[in-house]
Image 1: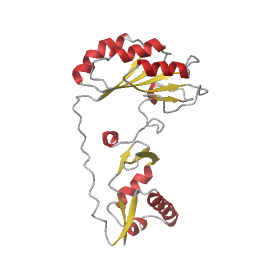
Image 2: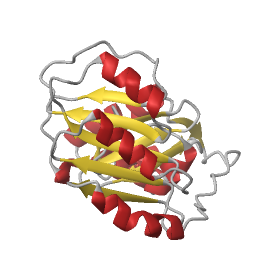
Image 3: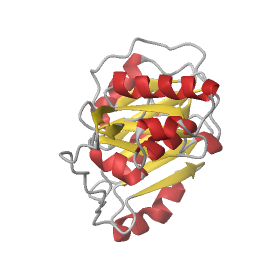
Image 4: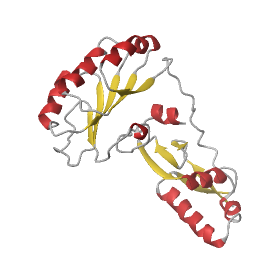
Length: 235
């Protein structure tokens, strides 16, 4: 009998339609069909041969392709006679001293930030994601950053509707005048206005999608950074 062993540094987060496999050693995450998770779960309790016996010949070919894929991606390895017991699993406990670690906010007027600032401080919130349907000026973006000066907030992620005033010079000014901006995603951008290099202290992304509020919170690997804390938070 042969057995599939999942490496302990591989974490899987199961969603409604897909799974996210995170390689914590390489700091890489990738999305796959939900059925791949079903196979991995079966291989945790049955040998490869026992799993194959549960399916017809056509399905066996697909299962073999999935198995070969898992080996090729180095998500796991094959042993004979039994599973390898030399790879203890990671602790999946997640600790955060904040009562609430992050919040999502649909922003129309900056005055709402004044209303919730005290709550953010008292709850020890460290991260905020802001979605805005309208175009924000340079001064408004800087003002958002300044409102949380001397607060517990560590990072601000902003989804903004793109307009033609956005250029490299403006982003450079934001880079010089903000402290807590972690990333800005400009949506509904038909053409990227300039080449993005790693020259800013925050992440800048452009997307052609006309994002709605329902789009926020969905996993997009363009904006997803793999690390242990984020992976444990998703489990």
